[in-house]
Image (tube, rainbow, N blue to C red; front, side):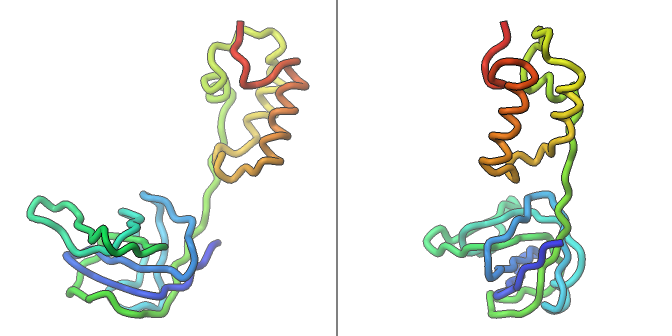
Length: 163
């Protein structure tokens, strides 16, 4: 579980924006929990946007508006019904649990392209599908290990085209 300290809060046009002290790993569409900020900010929500500029409201068509001259890092925007609250200092926390999605042999074959190489065995596919698809979490060492595994099992680079 990841937890982030809230430094500022804002509520305009039924959209809340919280700023965290440090960069966060939230993603649009992900769920998170707000605690110890204030009503109506507290609760479980879905990330609607991760804006990089000051939120200034919603236009007549319902589009979000930002002041692009005022950058504001580490923000989370979500739908929240309540009375408008201008941007102000705050305390509290945002927490979320990161989930890892696993891949299948068919997805590996799709990613590699048409599989015609006879040495691309079920053993390789079983090994590869056990790796997380959250590629952004793989550091250079893990990527090198995956490449070495593929090279060992197939005798060639996993990024080279099949013939």
